[in-house]
Every structure is written in C-alpha cells, then in structure tokens.
Amino acid sequence: MQEKKNIKFLSGNEACGEGAIVAGCRFFGGYPISPSSEIAEFMSKRLPLVGGTFIQMEDEIASIGAILGASLAGVKSMTATSGPGLSLMQENIGFGAMAEIPTVIVDVMRGGPSTGNPTGPSQSDVMAIRWGTHGDYPAVALCPESVNEVFLLTIEAFNIAEFLRTPVVLAMDEITAHMREKVELLKESDVKIVNRKKPEKMPYLPYEYGEDLIPPLPGYGEGFRFHVTGLNHDKTGFPTNKSELMEEGNRRIMEKLDKNKDKVIKHEEFMTEDCDILVVAYGSSARAAKRAVRTAREKGIKAGLFRPITLYPLSEKALQKAAGKAKKVIVPEMNLGQYILIVERVIGHGFPIIGINQVDGEPISPSKILSKIEE
Amino acid sequence: MAQRFEIRLAGSGGQGLVLGGIIFSEAAAIYDGRHATQTQSYGPESRGGASKSEVVISDEEVDYPKATNPDVVLLFTEAAKEKYLPLCKKDAIIIADADLVKSEIPSEYKRVVKVPLTRIAKESVGREFVANIVALGLIRELTKVVSEESLEKALLKRIPKGTEELNKKALQLGKEAAYKYGEHILKG
Image 1: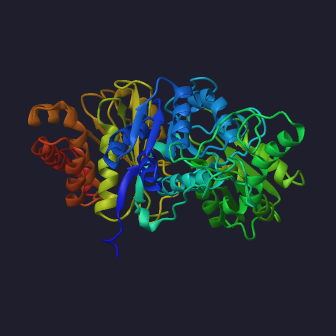
Image 2: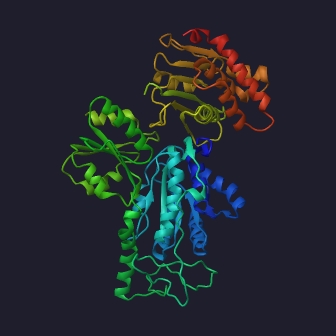
C-alpha cells in the first residue's frame, strides 16, 4: 500500500500550487511578494505544462482583475499575495462578491500594517480577510495548519468558490507556507472536484436563481451573453436602483452562504470532550496549542483545543458546545487580538477569554500557551 | 515526546543552512520513513543577515514544527553563537565552525565540537560552499538520527547536476571529521 501513495516532502507554498493544479486551476495572475512568492514561481513552471496560463501582472490590482476576468471566461483562476497586496485587491474582491465570480485568493500573511515584516510569521490579516472590502459580502476563508492540509484546503477553496460562485481566501502564515513536511499528493480522480453550475438553455437571465440561491454561470464565449457590473443589478445583470431589487440582491449574496454553510464549515476538536480550559487557535498557532494541550494533559490539566479550519464561516454551534464546560478560554494569535473578537461574540462573556498575542515576527511557543493554561 | 529530536542550524544567509535542513529532514521523512519538519527564519536579504534553519524528527506526527530545546546546534557565525548558545541546554551537542566562531564556548557545555568546517570544504574539496554538507555528514555520524544511505539519497536529489561527486566527498569528510574532532561524543 505504501508504494502506491505519492508522498513528497514539500513546502506549504509548493503544496498549494500542487493542490491548485489538481483542483483544475488553469490561470494564475499575480505579483510576487514574500512570503507567498514560491506559489507564483510554482505556477509559472507548472501551468504551461498543463495547458494553463501564468501572467505576472504589473501589480496586485491588476492581478485580481485578471483572475476575475479569467474566471468569467470559464477558467478556474487563482492569485497569491501577502498583506500589502491583499490591501490593494480589496476593492475587486468586493466586485467578485457582488458580481458573483468564483476565484481563489491565497493570502500568506506577513506582519503589518504596511510592508511590515516580510519574512516572519504573522496572522495579522484575519480581520482584513473578513471585512477588508466595503459592504456586506459573504466572506469565506480557510486556514491550514500543515503542508498536507494546505494541499487539501487549496482544492477545497476552489470547490467552495465554484459551488457558491464567490471569491474564497486561503489564509496561510509564513510557517505553513515555508515549512516543509510530508504531503500525500492525490490525483484528480481521487478527490472531489466541484465545477460551477452552468445555464442549460437560452434564453436565460444571468442572475436568475433557484432554491440554493446560486445563479448558474456560463463562460464568455460559450454562447450565453451576459453583462457584469459591480452596481446593484437585477436578474438581467444590468444595473438597477429599485429598492426592492437592491434589498433582494444584497440579502441574497449573504443568504446563499448562510443557507449552504453546513457544506462549507470545517473545524477540528482535540480533547475537548471534558475540557476545563479551551484553547481556540488556527493556522500554525494551533500546532503550538496542540503541543501545549498535550503537555497540560500529561500534567493532569483538562485542556482542549478547538481549531477553526474555515475561519469564515465559523462553526459557531460546535464552538459553543466545546466551550460548554470550560472555565477559561485562551485565544493565541500572531496579532494583537483579532479572532478573539469573534470568539467573544460566539461564546459570550460568562468566563474569562484570554488572548495570547505576539507581533515580534516569531511564532507563539507551546510553553507560552502552557503557562497561560496553568495560570 | 522522547522520540522527538531537534536540530538548529544557525549562521548567515548564503551558507546553505536552509538547504542543509531540507536535505537532513527529507532523509528522515522520505527515505527513513519517519516524520519530520523543516522550518526557517531569515531576513529580507538574499545574502548575509542572520539565517536559521530547524529540523524536527519524530516517530510520531510532529505537532509543533519548530525546535524548542534542540539536541544539536550548529553555530556557523559569531553572531549565531552569541544569540543561540545561551538558549542551548547544557547537554546539547554544540558544533561550531572553528574558524568562524573564534570566541570561547564556556566549559559548562559538555558536548562541544569545534571543527573547521569551512576550511575543510575549501581545502579538501576546493569549494567553500559545501561546508553545509560537511556539517550534515558530521551531524549524522555524531547522532545517527538518520541513516547514511538516506542522507546520501536526499543529498543527491537536492543538488545541481554535475556536483554529485563533490557533495558526496563533502559528506564523507564530515563523517571523518566526527572521528577526528568528536570522539568524546561518539564515546558517549
């Protein structure tokens, strides 16, 4: 059995590229930036070999424009960036949400604000990913903790984008991006691949939707004519300022995620069944937390870990349940307290919710988390 | 936890410490079939500036991927010594490049090996830049944490074509250096 598996020793960025190819990504538009550059490098080598296209754009605004355009032409597309690039992309991420264009944005977080710390680990974009563009929009973000998970979640990011017709963010940190470890590379035939729903016959209304609230999306050039705008639009795809249609459209793009969120949400629980102390951690911080929880258990302290895999949407019910018996909740993150705001909203203020925050470009150590558990 | 083995390679950018870490961890993970992670930290410069590469090897899945209390520490610059020696446990194997780390290592550290890694690479292979590979051969022989065959396979996979013999020789020189400079450690 062992021989059959294709096990490689890769960095997270390389695994991300491998996952994108398996998911069917055939267009990459990007502007290299640490610590994400190896993704662009990988795609520039690999895409031409599978009939895809790689373009190094002039900047990140152009990059996101290019991948949205490619997606409208029927090609699965992706970009990869870091904080400064994510900031530049924000307006068009909103355009993607409003016009309902599936695409994947990989954000390998660096310390911010501004160009900050290019080469150290950080989780400082967690709020920018959720609220970066203006208006209400359905934010979906996945956050891997290992190289193997980077591979799987990149595929998942494409699947969710295609299914929900919306931009999806894969949020990594420098450790998951540059760390090398074993990854099992699966073939396309061994994984679930989701492709966007397409209209079946003409005439058709581009933004007409059914029960799942997700309109079908043809590719340009396939014979279906459609108009795309960032303005509020009706089912024809042309702008409208009719109150009831604006209300309907704005609500629908949020409701399509809400209605389908059970198909999107992912999380992991580790020793939460009887925990007195719950650690909520994501990305590479979750690996430090797992080590701390293990050590605490060896010392007879009932600690547990809840790891959101989809940062957005969060599995709120599961988090509430995991925190059920807890006397204390600890949220370690490489920022000055971002995701803790969500944890507080979801599980309330019945007990102390304590942040461990670090922005020195070094990872949060297991011993730092352990000492908070023991406090 | 007992099976967890940690290595820290510290020096400056351009010394090949990241590549060295990759080769060593790949030998463990792919060719020896164990679990391993390799992580790194460096500044924005492409050469110069502090560089650190860490390897964690375990029989179980590695949870925290960074070194927390390394069993082996390689010091390739004076600056690396100043920064990382105080973080070393007293019984860690501490390897220092004898020419690049001139200052004394206090006697409280019991398992110190001073080897002119860069000089060996330059004089015996004619290429200073394989000092990192000499170091890998040395670490392997002192610790036996990966097998000799696996390390050579991992090495040959990651180096440019045409440098195979050069690199194999560097690995061998590292092994020999273990007996010349590190007998006190080999004897336990």
